[in-house]
Each structure stands twice: as structure tokens, then as C-alpha cells.
Length: 452
Image 1: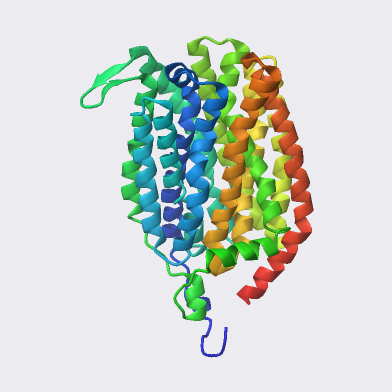
Image 2 (image 1 turned 30 degrees about the vertical axis):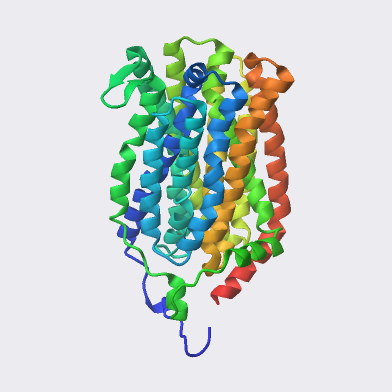
């Protein structure tokens, strides 16, 4: 900044707190919907496998790989627009696209068509996180951004949990009625009906997004210049030059994504295959798993967001410290739940797993936002989620399926595949976070210099 471009941001207040929190709630609704549409497929595994005659490995690609193709790669391009354009319209378009494509999943009658529809869901959801987190940065001052991001990222556990609650409550009733003849569409199987019903509410959420106002960018107030997004190659170069701060952090938190998608997607099948439950019992335990995800996921992200603000006032690497503490809980829960002798104990062990997995969703996103330059912020957020989801979706569900199919050669041994993957991944993620601490501190000091 030079003498002809005074810092105007100090004299311009942030948007009214009440309205800023309203924006967080609207974005939370969108994030919850995203996870419902993304994860409801985990409840439909047996019926999809039977209908399409596919293996666990093929199913794992529907759970993760198909979704991740555009979700990971398309997100970087979306982020470039978010760094210079209207973020509200990007989010509106994304919600509309993924909702329609979720309903298209319900119209698919072959494996390739369902695969392509899942690709479309991922493409739409790619337009949510980078512009949403960038938008929140302009709605909240630094001392409150941790809690705002914490509430927004509650959509991860709330949406995942709601998918299980809906699935455990509604899907058995849809199954009981059997295939239905719908006008124009024709014969619709229960699993197809489920996709259509969960996709419809997204069109209403998309309209709700239009009530959000695009805030003034704080960097514009500082410089007096319109925002100019850095070229993607320049952003990528910036990340690579500081790989110990950025890429190591991304990879550490990607282990969280492997847990969420690699472990989380297989939980309904784990319960069914391991404990030989009746449909009614299975539905009940799935609902309880959803309740655990919602309640303790919300506690985890809110406590995590609060700890972010507290730790960050004391330590330059406060966000990473929160992640480290959370990973201890996550490791205990995810490494042991699949080995429990009863389904009740398995669900109870998901409580520390959920608490530990929820906090880093807030702390990790806040950490990335804190050390990203303004002209690259949405793009760096996109690269962050690119790494999380490329690793989480491709490695997560498939790693579990590969261990089951090619090591144990027995679908009933799914529990041991889950325990193996969870333990290895949790240890690796914790080690990477510990290595990242000093490098994050240096990146944080550099970020403060930009603000000055």
C-alpha cells in the first residue's frame, strides 16, 4: 500500500452481526444439504449393488471417485471466479446444479449413467466451499471468524448425520412400498426414489441463497482497487514454494477426509454385515449413528471454532494445535469402533470419533483462510478442498473396499478393513500435523505482514 491508497478498511465497519450470522445460517443449510445429497448413497449400497450387479470396488467408485472427478478439478476454476466475481451467484448456481444432478441419480438405470450423475453432483458441490469461506472472511472480523467458520462447517457432521437419520427413518418405508410407477418416469426402484426425494429441497435452498448480499471485499477497502484474482499458475507456485506450510497441512487434514468418506460411507454396511441385524434393527442403529453425528458433530465444530479463537490469541499456530488435539480423540474412536462386540458399543465409540473429526473441519478451514493472501484466498481454499477430496474420495472408500476384496476376500470381514485403514491413516495425519507446526507459524507471520 502506498500513500495514495489509504487503508479505508479501518473506518468501514463489518456488516451488522445479526445479518452476518444470518448469512452463516443460510450457508450452513446449503452445506447440510450438500452432505445429505453426497452421503445418502451410503444407505443404498445393498440395493444399488443388487440392482446394477456390481462389486464393492465398483460401488466404492460411486461413493467416492465419481463424485470427486469434477468436485476436485472444477473447484479450482470456480475459486478463480470467486476471487474476482460475485460469490453469491456462484453458490446459487452450484446448489441448483447438484440438486438437479442428485435427482438425475434417481433416473439412472445403468452403472455408467449413475456414475455420470454422481460426477454432476460433485461438479455442483464444487461451487460451495471456496466462495462461501471467502465470503465469510468479508463478513466477520478476525477475532470472530473462527466461530463463524465453525458454525458453517457444522454442515459436515449435521448433513452426514441427517442423511443417516433420514435414511434410517424414511428409506425402510420406501422399501416397504416397493417399486413405483411414476408419470413420465416409469418404474422407479426404492433407491431411485430416495435420490429424487433428497434432491428436491435443494431448489428451495438455492432460492434462499439469493437473499444473501455480496459484501464489500476488505482488500478493496484497503487498496481502493477492484479485486484482481491472481492467475492459477501463480497461486500454485505460491503454494509449492511454501509446501511445508500449505501442502503438508492439506495432506494432514486429508486423513480426516479419508475417515469421513472411507470409514463413514461404509458404516451402514459394517452394521449390516457384522451384527446380522434385522431391517428394523439396522434402521434403528443407523438413526442413532445419525443422531451421534448431528449432536456431537455440532458440539465438536462449535468447541473447535471457539478453541480456534482462544488458541489463536495465544499461539501463532493455534489452529493447528486444535487439529492435533482433535486427532487424538478421532484416532481413539475410529480405530476401535469397528472392533466392538455389539452394535451399541460401536455406536458409542463413534462419539469420540465424531468429536475428534468435527473440530478440524472448523480449525483446518480457518487455518487455510488465515495464511492465504487475499487475491489467492478462494483459490487456495479450492486447492485445500481439492487435496482433501481427491485423497478422501479416491483413497477413502476404495482403500476399504480393496482391503476387503483383495486381502480378506470376504465381505463379512469389513470390520477389520475399517479398523486397519483408520489406524494407519490417523497415525499418518497426526505425524504430518506435528511436522507442520513451525512452518505454519512462519506462514502466519508472513500473513500478518501483508495485513500491516
